[in-house]
Image (cartoon, rainbow, N blue to C red):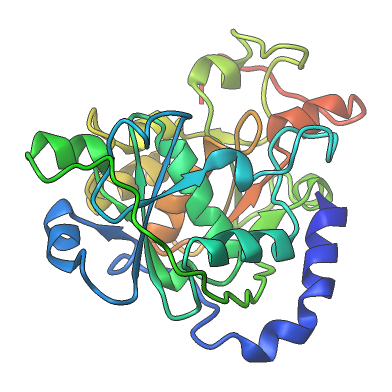
Length: 301
């Protein structure tokens, strides 16, 4: 992860001056949009709607004007790194999103095609890492809510005009293993395990990995942050869940999961609540592989 992230920053350093509207993170006012908002703004000139889902879901129907963002394109390729899900080099991402019509002036709306919310929050984190977080939002409730409200659906794929996207890589998105190791039980830095409680406690063991969790980590399962329709719970409810997990106002939240996908839901919710947030991208896959690092097994939070 370190090799790819640092290389991306270096190779794009010459582009930073040419990235208008780039940088910063989203806020509670910008990170989520409703289906009603999207319906009213579908024809906005600078709007780019991207459907994130599994193979075939986009082709079976999508929001008019939406383009398909393949999840496999926003993570490293098999064999490219020792880990399953890492950020690709920034120049590759810039080319990908540029071909989808995303520029530094675009307003990007991401939506989940079915029930894979963490695919969409991973896409959000990717754009956030590129400096587009303040210009990107999720469609709350995704495509399922859109269809349930009998809003228009199409199988037509619109023509897209490629755009130029000049990223400004953000250095406050990804936490590396050394950072996590150096901040175990550090006051003001909360390591949050986003997996199901059964993995956190060690009752269930991931394939080819150790049981348990990073020492000192709290457990806020990503599934608890949304309702049955994949809509994020009200801010007050989210804040209560974070508080119950020991997260205090002003803390930094560093989330992890199995491979760095589910934890992006916690990352998104933390940013939404105004926390300084990071993703330990290597997650348990990385930590568990280093047997010299401690693991903790417990029966509760």
